[in-house]
Image (cartoon, rainbow, N blue to C red; front, side):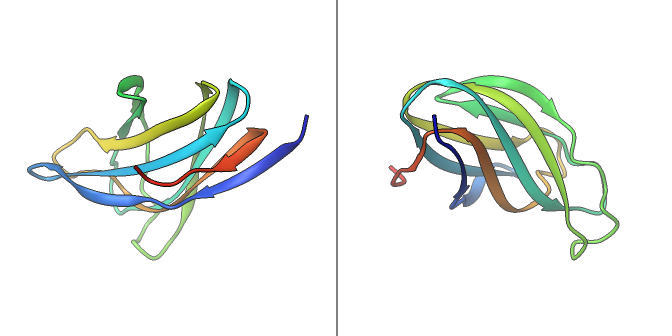
Length: 117
């Protein structure tokens, strides 16, 4: 099986007062465990929850302070994704919203880009 990396385009928008979300779509020829890595910056703790295909799969992903909004760090989690197109959403869970997300990197087997729907 071919391993790959996929950088997803991310859509940012308000989901409720004071909260942002980052949305993206990825297509996978086989289901399995994939590593999602976000590059982010923040001046305070701004945890988020991971929603895949409409279901919360991780309810608290820490995004600790990086020191400035121009100082970048990464956070990674492993998640099970199904074959086909998966809707991946990272949503802030505090009144401070989510950290400043630069990109999401997805590593795993047989990755293919998918159009935003």
